[in-house]
Image (cartoon, rainbow, N blue to C red; front, side, top):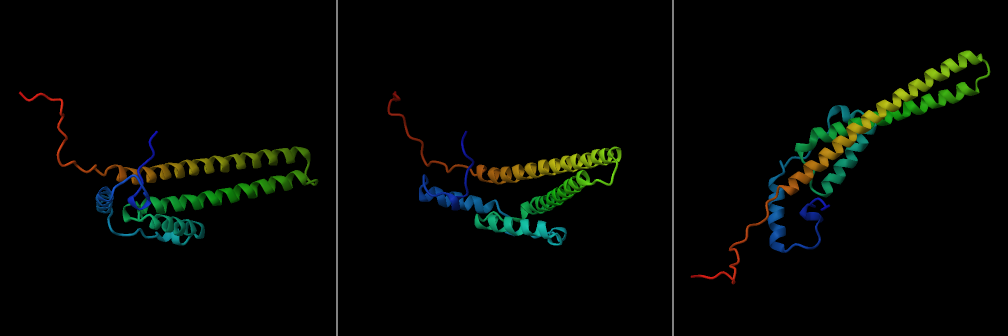
Length: 171
């Protein structure tokens, strides 16, 4: 399976200077020229803000920090923060379940009932985490596909004159 195209800045060989210049010019024409901005809800959430700063830095390095992908990146950072919150809740539920098992003051019947409810809560949080992770994966794929689609949409340079077949009989 062929690998996706890389931006010209990341390519090191297998391309002559003329092709590199042409690809760089076309890649530049696909950008809006504006950097993305952080949404207020991302800025106010410390986890989402941390992800936003990291992704912004990474995309800036390859010069793909473009306003056209701004909503996707902000949404991605928000969902990442939500995943972290759900994982913290799951840890808290697990800790509560462990303390319940060690509790000797409750009768066995009440203990089993509470344990079943806590396990149901843990499973509910786990399914919510899985749904969020599925959304993250979809966004990641779409973002990468969008960048790959931008790079793949670059037409190949036209050759000036097709070579003539020397075996063709002119008659």
